Picture 1 (cartoon, rainbow, N blue to C red):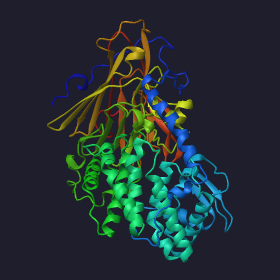
Picture 2: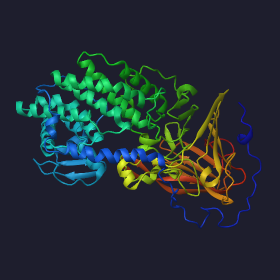
Picture 3: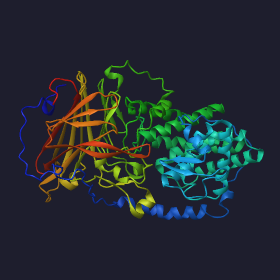
Amino acid sequence: MSPLGPFAPRGPETTLDVASGQIPGLPGAPVRTPVRSGDTIAGPGLWPAIAGRVATRQLWIELYGLPGYGMTLGGGKVTAFAATPRDFRPHDPAPGRNVLAGRFMLAGASMEVEASADPWNRPSPSRPFAVELHAFAWLPGLMAQGERGAREALRLTLAWADAFARWSPFAWGPEILGRRVVNLACGARRMGAVATEAERLKLADSLARQTRQLLRPPGGLASRAERLTAAAIGGCVLAGAPGQALRRRALGRLDGALKATVQDDGGHATRSPEAGLELLLDLLTLDDALSQLSEPTPDGVSAAIARLTQGLRLLTLPDGRLASFQGGGPSSAERVAAARAHDDETAPAKGDAAHSPAGKVAGLTRIASPLLTIMADAAPPARGAWGAAACAQPMALEIACGKDRLVTGSGWTPASTDRQALRLTPAHSTLTLGERSLNEPLGGWKGDLLGPRLVGPPIHVTTDLRDGDGAVWLEMEHDGWNELFGLNHQRRLYLDQRLDELRAEEKLFPTPGRKEIVRQIAAPYAIRFHLEPGVQASLARDRRSILLRGASGRGWWFRTDGPDVAIEPSVHIDAGLTRRSLQIVVRGSARTDSESKIRWKLSPAGASGDPT
């Protein structure tokens, strides 16, 4: 493959004659421009979903809230626990020690609870805190504290069962309920070992009731596989005929849910790498529970585990964490390693270009050289019910240089419910026009009904991936800016695997066959490169080059021929906490009636021709 065309060595630089104030972001202008609303409206396609939700939501609330509803959750009496499923997630024991001391520290907030009291009949400091509290996210760490931890876990669990014996929309909501059932199921047998006979029967009855509720509506399509997996795990733990009946019902429905959720390439239908990781961990727990019962794992479950494992290989970056796209955070290297512990795939020797495989999973395309790994979002965001955590950031990039993740995005996940703006186009490393977002989360009463799914005009993305002798070429294009500005955006990446050098061209051009309507003659653009928190960025004297250094201290030069380059503040969500970071922003103005090109390059520092 030849690096000709836009990737050829640049000739003498030309001076752009731009009037002062014509390009947003020039010296003297505000460095942080507020994102303008894209004036997104909910299309008519949403109305059937809205009508259906309006008709059923209140019905289920009224039904499940009836005084006698709890009696319908009863079944055969459960007197023992049959299995102790392994939770493959690594858990920090520190939160468990804090709970023993009366401190619940969850989702970046804390609550002090006096001795012998519980957190159930008091207000939570935040909604994310309440979600983790009622999902029993504190339970695994508490169970790691030995017998004392198991006794405290039993006390808190039974106190919850007393306070929330009746169904409530929040505490018994399907997503929270699913996580609580998994956490309870993994610890139930050990809690039962320190319980009295009456306490053990009460614990088993509570777990059985919650598991039965998981098999009932309502529940969204996007989390159906996760809920059924949790119900199957609960059914494995409960001994006797009641447990067997629950797991048979759950497993009978799970195969169809997994086919809809897990794509052939191993991606999750939401396109979130983290969602696929979490589902894989739950399926591994289910597989372990079934093996303890000497029952075969259904073929559909085994196939889903194999596909998700295959996808996870490609979605893991050299730092051991996940690519962070479409509402999925990077997770942790320990969590990813735990999910891959069963993977027999061996990696090539370190330093081989094949050490970082190329390919595509759920629209996320990976290209790599020995020192550079690039992940690109080369597909439109998920739509409909799958888009509740989708992000309007087509052709966004993450770039790892060695094990240093330099270029990334905002790190938004559904846990950051109060940071919805970080789902918009400017919050990842891609191009924006007019400081607008291509799509927006559904808000208002419609969002309350359907959840904050992403709405707006459809975005069509095309991709061409080619490789040759020592080089990889990735060309992506989307038409999302056509409606507002009549322009298409093309991003072309050329990775020289011998030099570990990435050369890129951003092209804005009139959309072929676009409607001839009156539009503004020019549109301000901004190409953003959000940096991982802790990455150092220094602007060179030529005002076109920026030296980047990650945790390893190794330097990389970012260069561009864009008319204005700046280092600006940014934010990054890390494990639910908002951290300060930086972003490189290349600004300019593109005509809507002709073609505009901006080039940039990333190469190792220390090579000849480095700027000063």
